[in-house]
Length: 70
Figure 1: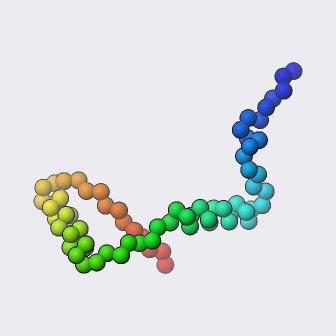
Figure 2 (figure 1 turned 180 degrees about the vertical axis):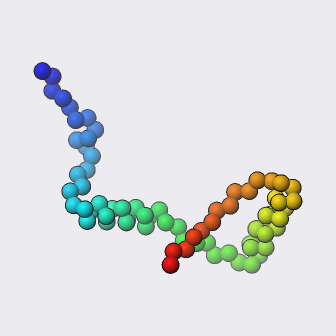
């Protein structure tokens, strides 16, 4: 009977405590979060001009929206 190896599972870390998993999840969210950029009125006007131009000539735009949590 051949010996069955667990493969890569034996090298994965063990997460025994729920508090530990919650802490790691919170840390991952905090590290991946980004602050909202500060936009001055000139940048805002430039964005508006690009949107109007794209609407007039039926171009496709990619818009990134930052949502603030309250």
